[in-house]
Image (tube, rainbow, N blue to C red; front, side, top):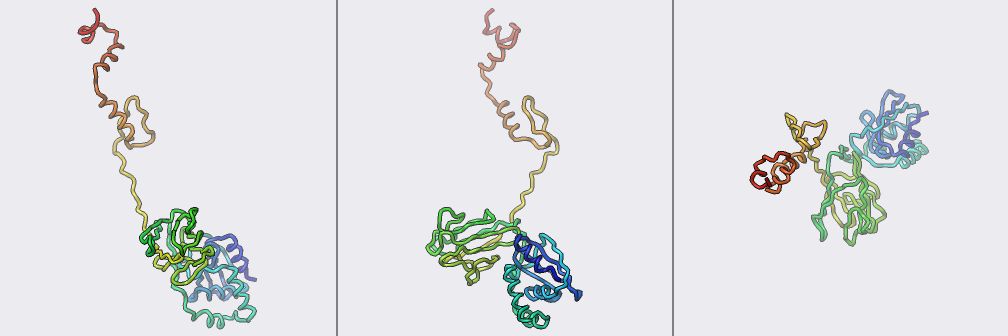
Length: 290
């Protein structure tokens, strides 16, 4: 008996990201990808998507292994495992699990264009408002879970009448950006369709209420460290230097400069000569008592 449904349910409930490698009894193999516990992609030979998944589930003697943190090459779907297994159960009840039937039902269906998954940790994620009275307002996602709405406790406040108090959440991790509507009055839409929970990619038409947002990914600049000094600075008397470094400490330079450029006055000279025991100094000869 295949353990694939058990594997799917376990990793779904755990919210895991990775792939299931399925070795089927006919010699073929399939790779099923999960992202945060949801099904996003599957491939088996020339087949992919739901067809590849259901073909794997229909093999009751397939061997399964889990490979954690393996990211899908793209995301064609974002479907909960419970929903998929329910759909698979309906196919089973209707005796539609043979290969020919599955290919006829899912093989000729136009697959979605897919969302390319990239390493988002290398990018700054920016949203710019394209309409309304605060057009060109821009905000950067600084948190992995950003609350958007009209209320003051939101991370991003959009003071527009079409936006609910707590309208939606924008969630991002290393590999994807997801928008979750929070039961808003006017809804959240991506590419003209109202959504409840959907992945977002650059170029999508994204609306929060009637506020249109343009998402941009800006590659973070990697600033190289300043070059190290070839020779270490000589230690300055009376100043504690930074250990285990061959770079000059700017604080040391400032303190040293202040000491060297201190104005010289007669008062300073008087204080210095008080410490001398000799009565034959020039100062004592000129001004001191005999």
